[in-house]
Image (tube, rainbow, N blue to C red; front, side, top):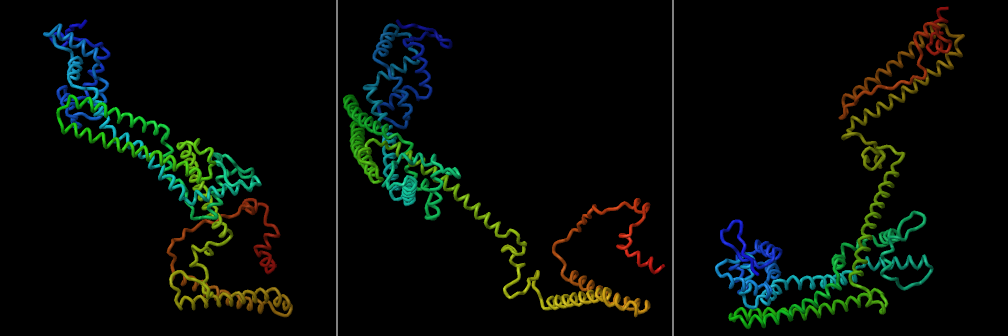
Amino acid sequence: MPVAKKGPETKRSEILVLDSKRSNAINIGMTVLPAVHVIKTAILNFDEYAISKEGIEKILTMTPTEEEKQKIQDAQLANPQVPLGTAEQFLLSLASISALAPRLQLWAFKLNYEALEKEIAEPLFDLKLGMEQLSSNQTFRRILATLLAIGNFLNSSNAKGFELGYLEKVVEVKDTVHRQSLLHHTCSLLLENYPESSDVYSEVPAITRSAKVDFDLLSENLVHLEKRCKASWDNLKVVTKHETKVVLKNKLTEFLKDCTQRILILKVVHRRVINRFHSFLLFLGQPSSSVRDIRVTSFCRIISEFSLEYRTTRERVLTLKQKRAAHRERTKTRGKMITETEKFSGAVPGEDGSSPVSGEAGPCQEEEHENMKNLLISTDHLMIDQKGMRRSRVVRSLGRVSPSQMFRAREDCTGSADDATDEIMDRLVKSVTQNPSDRPSSPKTRKRSRLNRKSMRRTLKSGLSLDVVQALGLNSQTAEQV
């Protein structure tokens, strides 16, 4: 029995036929839909601008059943002066539309067909493109050939091929010395023999996209799309019985004809792509008995994951090679001075034997350099003569030469040495002042060794030893005094 209920904000009662759960669901759904009269006009005219695709799907869940329609009409006849509730009014308005369910189903199919067709056509195109990319990829062929050669060498066999599922285990097989994977050794051999090879993964993006698609579900979606197209033809027959607009009838008929033709083409494309996939497996060397059992998704996933692992390993091998090359470059300069390296090649003497000078070396600087060298050589000879005279000649003729002559000779030698030293110092000062250094030199304090450090207090207290006296030259003065 209908219940007349007084609303909290209305003064008149309302007829509530639906239960609270159903009524609340309808009221919530109405909040995202236009007004009731707009909905009715849009459904009759198939107006896509008034109601969106989501709105049509929402209305399909709110369509009244025959029982609800009968209850609302009986309650309205029993209480003609009492208004219906909001949900009841909405359902009664929808029930007044002729062939409501067929119209909504036909309209929903019309709005969803493009997306449904795209979900089937794009994966098929990616699979076809991926097989072409993989068959023309030279790096992938060389990888398979290298793996086969390594496997035959390790197993001492002469196999003509291996299962594609073995590509998943290449990363797990490792050597017993360096614990590097078989993929690492394969990549190293490939980079050594074919340095122009690629990383494979970036060249087969269609295979990576196909690995994310369930092709078994895609076949079911194609069958489901064909069934919906046939059901739309039945719905169109029901709608045309109550529809008087010829333009709308022709428009819907043309749409379904086009959909039927495109679905037939899609089925042919699907069958040919799957057959081409089986042929591609035979091209890769797969036995014909197991071709039908291999799933498209699993095959694409194996290839995609292997190519990704190969790219990662390839980058690691290249990085390792760069580090080794840099290490070899560093070891080339080990034990050499910085001026002997290529970076500072300007400091290395040229092929003609000329020594480089900072800036442009003029003839005056070269002449100054020669004079300084000659002066140093003459000074060295003078010092050697002094030492020889002191050690040999002076000692041998000590009995024949008087002390005054010996003192006079010593003064002459000392004076000549002092003159040479003064000349050297003057030339050094001139060379420094004429070619000042660009970088200011910071004086560093020389660290003195504390191993032979003596205490002045203990020295004055205990006196000097004989070795210290001889080192300071005090014994000669003592002898002269004596």
